[in-house]
Length: 481
Image 1 (cartoon, rainbow, N blue to C red):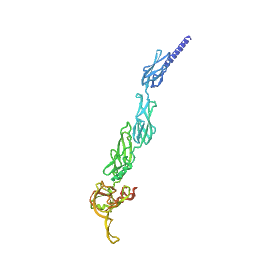
Image 2 (cartoon, one colour):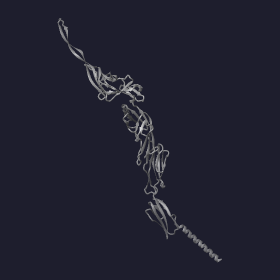
Image 3 (cartoon, helix red, strand yellow):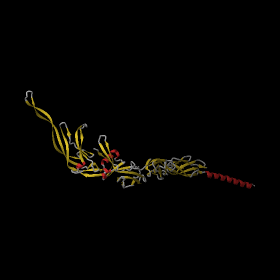
Image 4 (cartoon, rainbow, N blue to C red):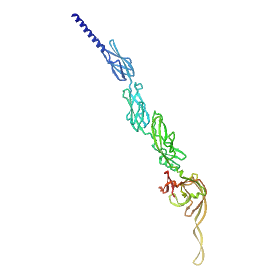
C-alpha cells in the first residue's frame, strides 16, 4: 500500500513538472518571426513567457527601429532583424520595410481625343523606390472614353470623361485626367468649291470674307487650286505626330492628293474620307462632304477677233449728259458703246489687249461779234453810215484721232467713254461720226441660248444692269443701256 502511494506521488510530481515545462515552452518567444511594415508605419512585437526584463535591438536602425516595448517602426526600404533578449534566451524576427506610393503623377491632366482615335496616358509613381509602382486605370464613363490596362485612351463619342489612375500597393494614391472627346472633321466641316473663269466673280467671293478659311475655295480654270483644306487636328506633348490618308468618293468631281489638297474637277458632290493611320489619334476617321459648283462661262462664250470691217457690227455710239465735279450738267458727250449682237449673243467683255484708233469727224461752232455799217438818214435828209455789232455763228468741220484701250481709258462693262462734244457760251463742237482706222484685240459674247433668266436691276447710284442667269446657275452682270 505504501509502495503504491509512493508511485502515485511520483506520477503527480512528474505531471506537475511537465505541465510547468510545457507552459513555459509555449509562452516564451516572439509573437512573430517575420513581419512587414511600411515606411513611417509601425508593427508591435511581443515576447510571451519570458522572465526578467526584455531588451530589444535592431540589426539596421536605418531601416527599422524598435522601442523598449517592442514597437518596430519602418524607416526606409530594406530588411532588418529585430532581436528580443531575456536572460540567457533570445528571439529574432525578420522585418521587411516597404516603400509605399506617396504620389501618382500623370503625363497630362487634360487630353483631347477624337472619336475613334487614341491618346496615351502615362502614370509615374513617387517615390522612385516604391516597392509597387503599378496602377489600375478606370474611366468614369466608358461610353464616352475607354481606357486600357496600359493607359491607352480610346474616344468613343463626343463628350467628357475622367480617367483615374490608382496605385495598386494599397496606398490609395491616385491621379485624374479630364478627357474631352471631339468629332474629327475639317474646319467648317463641309467644303464648297467654285470652278470659274470669271475673275470678277472670284474676286467677289474673296471680298465677301470667304477667302482663306477653307469654307469656300475656288479653282480658276487653268490656274490650279488656290488654298489647301486645313485639317482640324490637335497635337499634345509626348504624342507622336499623326499620319493621314485621304480618299475621294468621286474623283471625277473632286480629287484629293496625299497632303489632303483638293482639286475640283467638275460640278457635283463627293465625300473626302480622312483617316489617321498612325500616331496621335490613330484610327479616327472623318467624312467631309464636298460640293463643287461649276460656274465656268467659257462653254457659253464666243470669241470674235475685231477688225476695222466688223467693228461697227459690235460697237456704236450714244449721247449722254456730261457733269462737272458738283454733278451739274455742263453739256453732252458721245459714248462709244457696244451693241447686242442680233444673232443671239450678248456682249460680255473684251480681251486685255483691246485697243482701237478712231478718226472722229466733228463740226466746230463758235460765236463771234461782227462789226458792220448800216446806212441811215438824218432829219435833214443826209445819208450817213452807223457802225453796229451783231452776233454771228461761224462753223467749220474737222477730224481728230484718238486711241482707246483698257489701259488708258475708262472701261466699264464693255463701255468706252470718250467726250467728243463740248458746250460753252462761246463755242461748241458736235460729233458727226467716226471711222475705225486701226483695231486690236477680241470681244466675247454670251450665247443667249445658255441664259435661263434675264432681269433688269438698278444699283443705289442709279446705274442699270442686266443680270443673266446661265444654265449652271451662275449669274453675270451686264451694263444695261
